[in-house]
Length: 351
Image 1 (tube, rainbow, N blue to C red):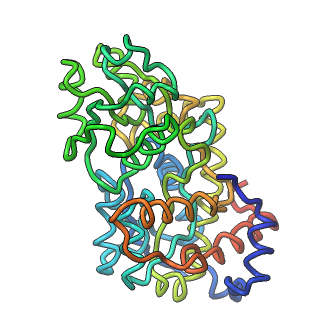
Image 2 (image 1 turned 180 degrees about the vertical axis):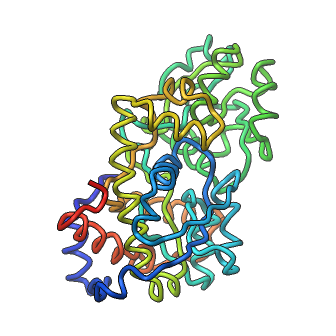
């Protein structure tokens, strides 16, 4: 699943007539005060939003972003569809594609993280018993026939990743023993007792669990599905159309914060570590310990469309969780990110 460059993506989309030209508004309208209700998940991957909020980037562009925390991005989708939220970050899941395909009028408009090589933040943990059997790399899934996988829900990122691992090893979905409905608070104690063999565990929880002797980190998401898109910002078509200038300004703030987030992921930085720590409830030292395996942020929000398309195709063709696919030209609206990038290139208000 290779990424597409900005030039290739835009040129191809325009040539196909699938993406309208950007709406550039008059300067007097562009800075109109706007309140945005946004859903977010309180994890390290939410760093760009936390940075933009803490450093006043939204306020500088006359936006008031009112955030609502959700344990999982997917839990905010009903609120978005009901009009209770304007924007939310959502993991790519069967549920998201289902909601989009059923006429909810939603569009992805900003990539919010991908598991790029060396940056994948989702670990695959195995029990100590499985580790001793030799499950110590991505190829360890060849030992997963009959293995007990602890997983929260069907159609989730973990469902996708484990399936990729099984197929890479020449196994089928039914070759594993899937234990559904298991949150980490349930699956990890069972793993420590060698009663669950494999779980998907994001950072920094994976490091903490390993330190407690629960199990071992065997491989990572980026080794199972390199460059797969983990999440995107989502909004209604109506909001993207009627509040275009506010969405552009939102994207400008996040783009600036993405750059600072990625710099901190590479080199650290007390200010950013503290901002993320305060927002997630983690000690800055714990946030720092997970570097550099923070989910990679596309600096200009451009999507790895091949990954998004492949994931939707997976849920539709390989499971019974997605009956109807969203046409490719109705998945992602890139007008706001294109205009935001252009405005930042011409004059960056944050520098």
